[in-house]
Amino acid sequence: MVALPRPRSAARPREVPDVLFLCAISPVFAGLLRSDSGLVVTMRRRRKAQAARLGIAMLVLLCGCTATAPVNLSGTWAGQFTWLTGPAAGLSSSLELELLHGSRDLSGVITLSSSGQQTFDIDIERGRTTGYTLVIEASGTNDLVTPAAVVLLDLSGGFDTTNMAGTGTQTVNGNEYDIEWSATLVAPADGP
Image 1 (cartoon, rainbow, N blue to C red):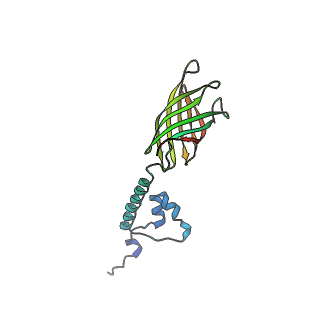
Image 2: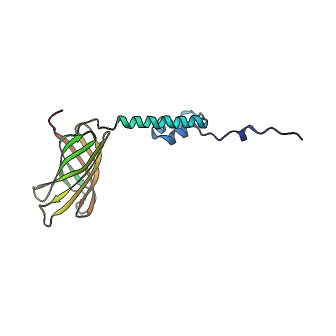
Image 3: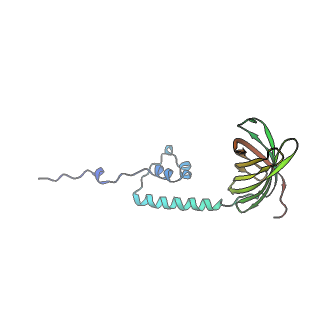
């Protein structure tokens, strides 16, 4: 009996093109490497594991580089928000943020308009920056209306040295409304 040689393809493990493997690891690689670039190289499992470790290490380092905000947001910011939903959809109201920015955390007060020309303040309960994005959660009570209204304001968006804008929600006595907002720096905080 004669033994036939085993076909070469049956002995090889299935390999995945580098491009697909790297794109699955990180969106950064997905943007850099495209299937239409003509680069189709295959890696063995060991190299794939090494590439995965390297990719994860690079992502950790990149995330560490943007852990603190590149801009100090401390100061007074004035702007407005526009309701996108609810009975006031399409209407706008003034907004003022008095921010204190330390490392990545934001604290302070948000001043909102009430009836007439009156304003009321709500405290920032939680605020955070990452790179050029921010998230703010504020709450308080509008005692200028009867009965008093519990107001929650959740803002998220982006910023640069003099402007910030984004989307969010305003909740009044449990009724939630979508908003768009923007603000401009009118008075930087004193000091460094």
